[in-house]
Amino acid sequence: MAVLVAAVIVLGGLALVNLLLTAAVIRKLRKITKELPAGRARDGFGLPVGAEVPAFSALTVADTKVTTDDLAGGRTLVGFFSTDCRHCLPNAPGFAATARDAAADGVRNLAVVVAGQEEPAGLLDALGDAVTVVVENEGGALTDAFAVAGFPSFFLVGPDATIAASGHEPESLLAAPSLA
Image (tube, rainbow, N blue to C red):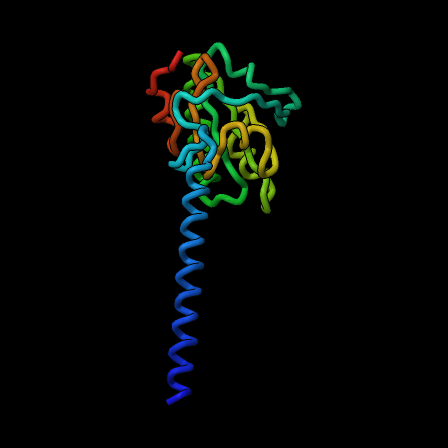
């Protein structure tokens, strides 16, 4: 009988510790959720519509400098791809075609390839020469500036360097009105 009482006490104690740990985890998750940066979208794209693109500076594969100032004065279609993303390579030619068609209407383009485990050569070939491309590592200047949370992600930046639209289909973004 004493063994049974001891077992019930030990199991009750373990259940109480488990309950306390679960409550602590829930409190921590609530705190983290409240502290998310204000510019961070919760839908997985990145910066929300209307947010101003923070300052950045990067070099393209053609060795030209791209900064936030280059986004001002016109609309820019920006695509983010990762070499580790299985959906990115199939979407790259569509982005390149959309960017090429939009260029006829004066829309600039920029593709950001985040180099992961795989080499970026396949994505660079798929994007072609009609797209301005920046290759950066994870946590690079552009990925951080746009707060990209998933790949592929696409943004339409308005003439005032704010996000006019975002999504996973670049062709649907061009119908979005600019916020200028």
